[in-house]
Amino acid sequence: ELAALTRSLDARLGQIVAELPAPPAARGRALLERLYAANAGRPLLQSYEAAATTLYDVVTTGHYNCVSSTTLYLLAARRAGVDARPVLLPSHARALVVLGGRRVVVETTTRNGFDAPPSVSREAQDRARPRGPRTRVDLYADEKGTEVDWNALLAVTYGNLGIVAEDHGDTVLAAALLAREATLTPPAQAAVV
Image 1: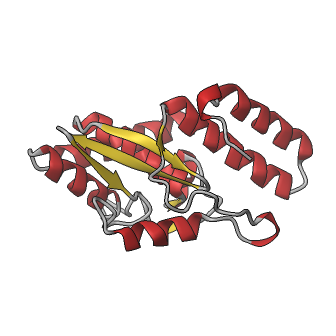
Image 2: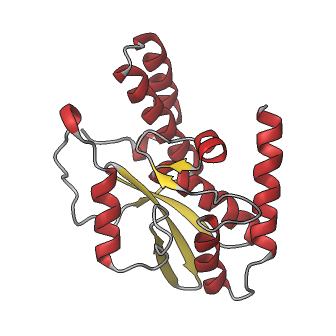
Image 3: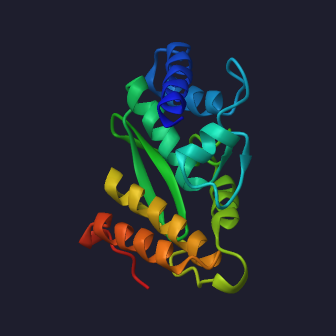
């Protein structure tokens, strides 16, 4: 099943990339819009779901969160020749596109998140903040985020899955997932609690 899903995603991304305009700035914007558009079937990114943190969630259900939508955007951008990089903030992930000397924020949780106004970024961050008993103080409300590598973004995926496992009472799985997160988190990018 995983191999079939990988082939399906690869084919969908290939189709999307083939239809992109040539200028790099236009490619980055059009790429995000097309991830939300129906391309030979349902849109890859259909609806926000806080627990949908993996590409498996995206491919099988169309549900996404900031981590999975950022991962998908980065994979597609790499294929499209767009210089896109992961950015982490407390309780949020997004992308950054480098266009010459200009750095463009991409809020991947919304179709119009390419170089979006600050209000769109605030909405995306508010949606991503934990709710309920796990509420945390947002110590970095004005932070622009930290550019990270792929390992750090993958670490967040494991961390999110570990939190879900813990919330479902599976402490053994949660411990294993959180340990994997710790091995992937670069020391300089480790979260400050």
